Length: 148
Image 1 (cartoon, rainbow, N blue to C red):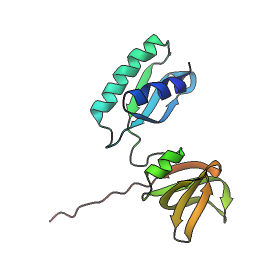
Image 2: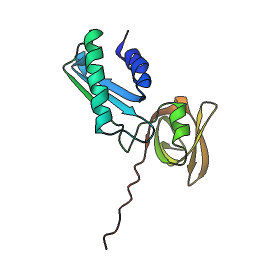
Image 3: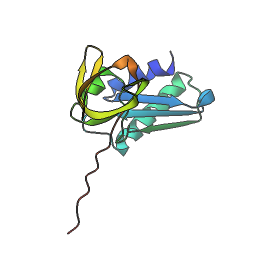
Image 4: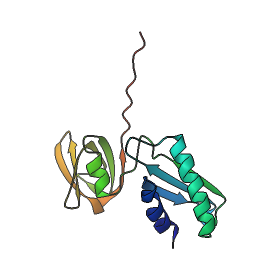
């Protein structure tokens, strides 16, 4: 069983969503990004790290360092469920091929229908086929409070 399949099988049963994972050349560093409803805290990362450390030993996954973290404010979007879940949030899409002379489109997500992402832009509602998206991320929204 490969690492991707192992993570896909293990994390949902622990109550977490596998957002993404990556490993360095030769697999020395394994980095896992997790999420759950309500967000991820340090205890969640420690729990998953401890579990994966034991699991990797049993499954003979060779690595030197394991990092488990939340996906961050600029969370990557890759599945149709991601685009639907974050409807109403601002996102930036980077496309494989330019559309209207632009490879990047920014707007508010309106969901995903029939394999295409719906994105509200200043030019109107755009429908972008998922297979045309090279990379998609949420645009962080930081609200600063004024000190009085």
